[in-house]
Amino acid sequence: MSLLTRTAGATPDDFAPTRRRGPRESMLSRGASLLVMGVFTLYFLVPIWWLFIASTKDRGDLLTTPALWFADWNFFQNVGDLITYNDGIYLRWLLNSLGYAGIGALLATIVAGMCGYALAKYRFRGRETFFNIVLGGVLVPATALALPLFLLFSQVNLTNTFWAVLLPSIVSPFGVYLSRIYAASSVPDELIEAGRIDGAGEVRTFFTVSVRLMTPALVTVFLFQFVTIWNNFFLPLIMLRSQELFPVTFGLYGWNTQLNQIPELRTYVLVGSFLSIVPLIIAFLLLQRFWRNGLGTGSVK
Amino acid sequence: MTATEVLVTRGRRSPARAERAPKRKTPHKGAIAIFAGPFGILFLLFYLIPIGYAVWQSLLVVERDGTYGAPQEVFGGLTQYLLVFQNAPFWESVGRVLLFGVVQVPVMLGLALIFALLLDSPALKGKKFFRLAFFAPYAVPGVIAAIMWGFLYSPNLSPFTDVTRSIDFLSPELVLWSIANVVTWVFVGYNMLIIYSALLAIPSEVYEAARLDGAGQIRIAWSIKIPMVAPAIVLTAVFSIIGTLQLLAEPQVFRSFSAAVSSTYTPNMTIYATNAIPNTHLAAAFSVVLALATFALSFTFLKATQRKATQ
Image 1 (cartoon, one colour):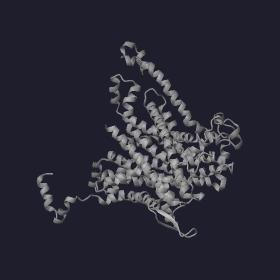
Image 2 (cartoon, chains in turn purple, green):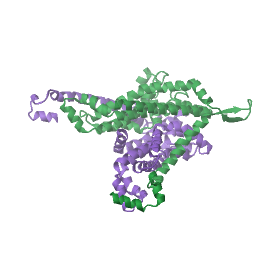
Image 3 (spheres, chains in turn blue, brown):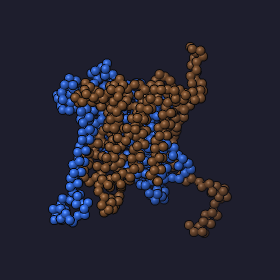
Image 4 (tube, one colour):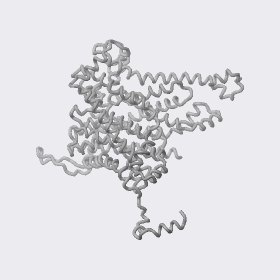
């Protein structure tokens, strides 16, 4: 833009002193900022690129060929070996992860969305106390709860079950916090009143009208919770003993600890890791808009 | 409402209702119960009761009749907490994560702030690409990131053998910072996005005014942008502090790459190891202490920065 203005005939004297230095400065800072961002792009992407390359190589090529470029293409061979190894336990783990994170995040979003909505749109006694306790819950990390949950679940014989990982994942205090803020600003009281006058029940108004207005926040809550459950490590570590129940991250962790005894697992760990992050990265990049909006909502207040 | 209307409605009320009137009946009680009830119950079941149960467990001790007698759980008061305070490995692990946090959190948030400011500055081209590239590692779970970097650090397996032969990233002196690098790698982009979205929320009139006053880009960043995104930075800092004290997956994975990482390397690893022995009651006391410390630290930080902001 500034280049265009200059060629349009403006003399340097037309600019205030600071602006006269503007174009040259911005050429310099343009280059510098590109350099900084370029270097860090390498830092962020090279490890992922290496993982991809590594998962296309057989065991011999992995150590003998240049690490950041292709050798013989063995990707599908590797994937085939991985998914048939140990009766297809890897696919089982992927499905488990999808189950824990998908079902858990969906239920968490519904439950937190309703609660946040109630806190934003209804007045009742103890509302602020309730909300403050939930906010305190945001500051209590999930890992701090893993051991207490284990102790409690052992009392009711729930450890080493699907439920042991799923049930605690349904509670998202952060989801309630975000839903409340969002509902307060995006669902007008007049709309709820209109629903009442039309004779729609409160629940119906919520599910037909308010949910639609709250969608961006609800998508954000779902994404956050999905990632939290997908990444959760302590809960499976402490709750699960049977391989068939492991989420994929925990299964890969288990393989990684056995590398010294069973070296052929190395290829499986690498290919398995790569396969498990590809869908997530794609989903992330597609849904980034929601992340930004949600993060913004959370931080401004 | 006019005076007559008030009178009329009052007059219509039955005496019993009039008596209750000052208490103000809550409308839509049923709807509130349906909306808030499920979360309330789940929060009670999977947050409050477990915490309460852990506190209770931490107050018990196991006693035996003689050396071979049947073990019995009896109330021991603060016995476990005395043991916690005498447990040197636990406090070493607390010191380790505090050292980790004091270095890693400012580095990570500093980088996140610089990236966010660059993304927001008119000088940068290709913003969308950089935003995606920097955020991509956040899609990699901590366990997988640790496995991946573990390979990258390993002297034999690393693609950068020239580097790993001269620097031993997995040595006792360096492994903590190698783990810090993994955590930074995963979370910088996430924190960058939080700060960036706060930057986007600043109204452009503010910049217009500054530009008229002759402020350059760097001056605007320093005097306007950074103060205005301070709440977002505080938020990322609180979450980072919580994350640091709860460090588990990354060091746990690094145990298979480096002998320097012990089973009590971080507080959460100590808790896991203690519970596995099994010494449930001591483990419960550890986790109560850790949860309180996390809560207190993040809460204090939140309050301290809030007071600063209002001054």
